[in-house]
Image (tube, rainbow, N blue to C red):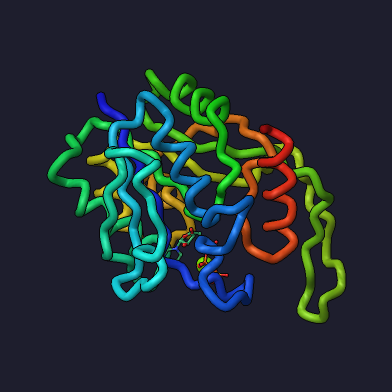
Length: 227
Ligand code: CTP
Ligand code: MG
């Protein structure tokens, strides 16, 4: 089977609160999403990368992406939710992808994806019947709140993982999962709703999602440290 990537990049970055969506903010002299896409296009197994933009995104055309090479394809079919954007991206990929090809869905907002992480994911799932995702064991102690924001319970954290992306599933099954189960926050959730059990592939905490301004500063430190 072939490997393809879909990068949902149609969010507005409301929690970040910048003057433009966080995927276009400067990160070491490049738009944040440049780093995200570079990690994917540089991987030899990934044949094509669909970037799902908002239909009215004015920022993408303001940058030069040619350095990322010919694997990149933009589609202006972002939806109201991340799941919808991914679902629309899958439709755009229909001309290229066969049912048993692998699709890696990766957040535009995770610019610190690295080659070793991608290798771990692809290698560990190569013969897997279901697919899976990068994830890390939860590090903090977890409290359940009551209605008054007082601690109702301390939740045991053993066995709890934090989901990241990429999430890697077979094309045909992912299309089926997302068309049946659209109210999910990640692809694994839709696959689970089919009664399947995605594999958790241990990633690492540097694969952070830029959500708040402090995350951007941390991403810059992480990327600088790798150079
Ligand atoms: N995304 C998308 N389409 C949407 C919403 C989100 O393609 N309708 C993408 C974002 O661009 C991001 C990824 O999904 O790369 C993860 O979403 P998130 O971190 O929540 O980004 P935003 O939705 O942009 O941020 P916020 O929720 O703070 O507005
Ligand atoms: Mg969001």
